[in-house]
Length: 408
Image (cartoon, rainbow, N blue to C red; front, top):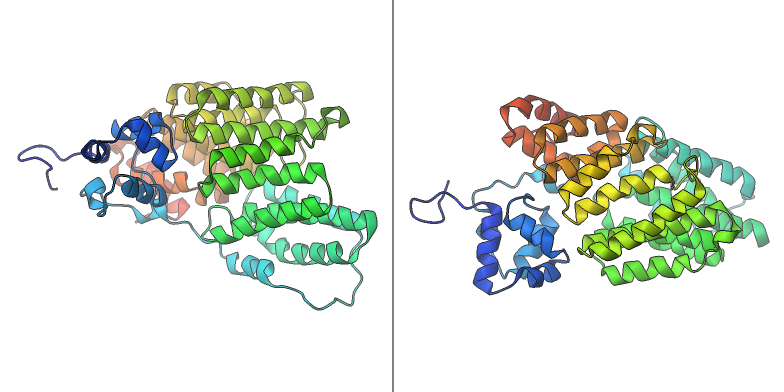
């Protein structure tokens, strides 16, 4: 291993980032603004509380520091490809084709009744949230479902047409979820945009609100400015009326969660917690027993997203504390339960508790194998700990890495 000073120990990744930042004469807040993260995030990187980020953010960091050669930041640290590579599901090509095939000729058959399509969409949501290989299940039904929904949305008239458009928006939500964490970012953006277009064509405030929630995830992953994300969420909130019933309350709470997560990404703790409080108030108003049938908004979801919020604010103690006060085992969706367990593992990773990280990632895999297998944090962390973890966890980490498909 090379040394950065004669006879001195090699610099860590964080020390190299600090060296380059100081060479450039940048403050931490300036660098944070350039990479779209918080000052606390930069501090955590430089103090090695956070590890090397994934490749897209690593490249943005290098560009912001004026570094042409990544080795100036990474040194002799090997970049584990599995950390940065999105896995492709075996049915990805088939789903891609269903989204990029345009049926320009009129189909002879009558469209399915809107009520029958609603049942199929409901069954698809149950398949997504159920235990087991949810991506494989949804890939088996999604191409035909999307085609039939598109035909119905074009062919039906009046109320049935609008209802079919709302259902098609949900079909695109399912496609977006299937495509997430796979090498198809352009299709994730496409499905997010199509869902909002269908919701607007149907003139459905609730469908537009749901689309805004999913578009917020797209925009966050694409690095879109947090102001734009929050603006979309808050405009959608204004379309809802809590006096119209539980669904409007749930959707409003969901959009405040979107705003909280957007603010957390850029380190605005006060704004993040203010919007989380609004989501919390919505969950309290709905009662502990309420769970939205497919968006899963409810008491458990709001509490679980507090973990993500504190993770993104790089507040490991608060994230771990939030995790210890909720029961993820009671969450009705296996996919959401696995995701939030992974977020709990991320909290313990920030706190340097690698034994807990491996234990939690194994639990996440047990809850929903395909959720863990396509999650970039789970994949990268398992690969890293399998190679560099302490002896007490290395065997378990290697077994986990094999399960997630990232073993060397």
